[in-house]
Length: 253
Image (spheres, rainbow, N blue to C red):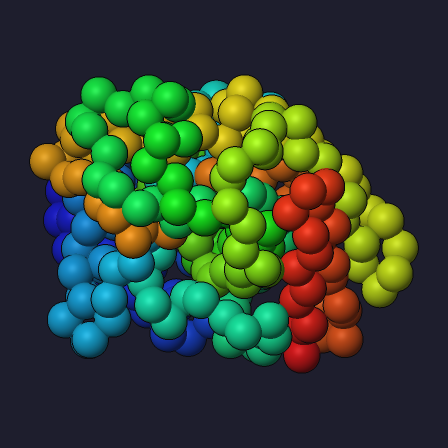
């Protein structure tokens, strides 16, 4: 199995904005371990191009997202500096974008390899309302876990709203209402992210430890969608309004 060839197919789909058929159809022998190696190949290419890793996203944390994507476990992807947007996205720079409202954390201390939710809460410096733009290089979002892991967990970009301190916040109880062009289209609860956003971040720290990596101070952690993902088109204004955390808005051009 030529993992570099599979990675190149995803890289080319990103460059051309033309999705490809699932890697698992082209290479039916692919395993999840192979998929992690493919993800790492393309992340390394981005780093060689000067991009900087600034955090991670936890994907497929909610029952709604697992059902929508037809998988039964979380995954993670790498966030790089160019993925942080100032509240505006250009749709034709993506392949087939969708949006998710999430709670994002920024760590003030490293997490241990055996991190618990309590460790995450103790290490969290700031909390943000956020919108993630997920994007798939796989045609029609016909994904298996192998396909999405290889494709950097269907990462696209993200937007952060205003920072809040964690003090006094019950992140599992935070509610979000997502509006598109002024109409509420979905709602969610912080507990959708593996029961608690801190549990999602702890899962990430433990999973990274298996690859010899540490979730370090300063890292952004996108803790997972609180609802099923939603399509967007040019002209849309998306606002995610979170109790206790405030609003974050994304304009689609």
